[in-house]
Length: 88
Image (cartoon, rainbow, N blue to C red; front, side, top):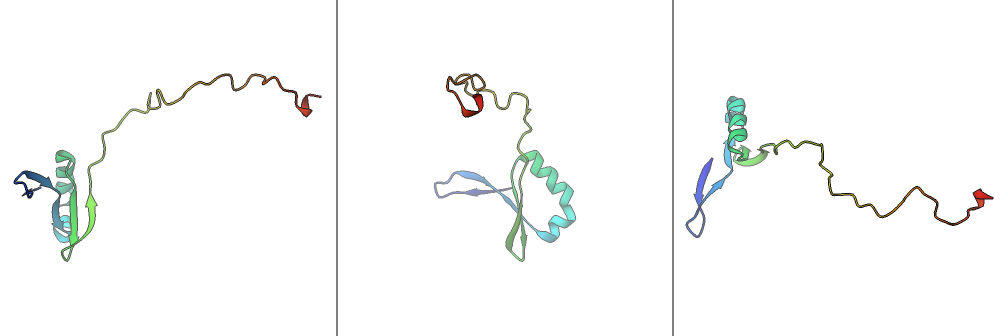
């Protein structure tokens, strides 16, 4: 990955850039680097960005993923106290 100083002199981590031919030759190694560092990789063709390889977000368990997202507001299956034509 490349380090670049911003206008205030702070070093910031920027995406690495690699030509498509080099990416083709070192694909598996570069994928391992993206996974290990968490930094994206920009692939260029003739100096123009054409693709980005980004790390996958960490896997989360689906169990409990919706906890706290449902609110009970009353009985939704009980009688409503009104007569319908179908009740006649």
